[in-house]
Image (cartoon, rainbow, N blue to C red):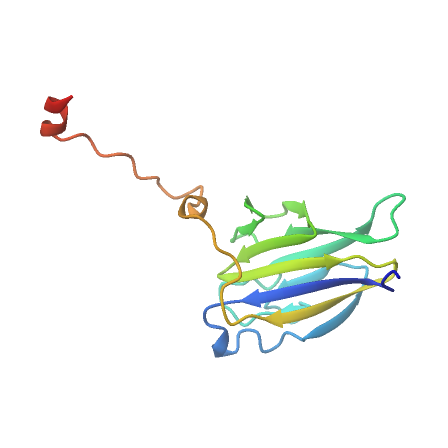
Length: 165
């Protein structure tokens, strides 16, 4: 039996979430097929109380592929001053990436995992939001280096090392 609509299971984690940063985010939300905005602005659909989150930080943009009955989603970056990490790729302002069945997203210290459960409704989709007490995403240190950070070069070998070689 097919689902009546697509459901996005969204898990959220932030180390300071006990300070109310997710307080304005509903546990369940039904939305039409316009973009769903994440941010701290008054008109954001999912509001975060974090100073590092822009008023309009990112959006989920549903679309229907030709010949498909289930909605597909792009994640689009709306913040000019922040980068968003999605499934191993760092995105900047106005860049977008299609969501996979399970997408991992990091922005402004927020870890988010989005699981897409397809459904046949073309007019709306639902979000079920869960808050995690422990981190959702673990990355190797090498992946965390920002493209604008200086990468420390190997130091010059000492005199003793040169003499041994």
